[in-house]
Length: 96
Image 1 (cartoon, rainbow, N blue to C red):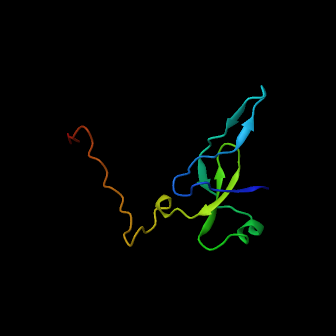
Image 2: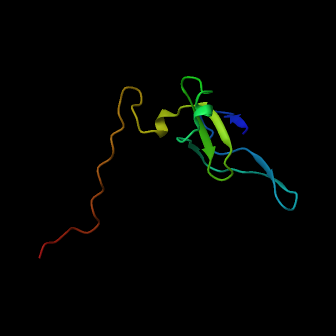
């Protein structure tokens, strides 16, 4: 399995693997990268501290890069992310 590195870890969210279709035309996958949480143990041992694996949802390519805390919903710069309160309903609830 080939493990790619993120080209620009701060802004790269899409896969950049080039593929050739049936007609011979070359194109970029552009699948969305998601953090791969079920990494096999032999790959997990190769990680450096502060790194994680990302996997393309379309072609399955595996990338290695830094952990993006803003995507995990954990503490960011000593402040926890607070969910917004639900929006009020459009029509008021009337009890009969």
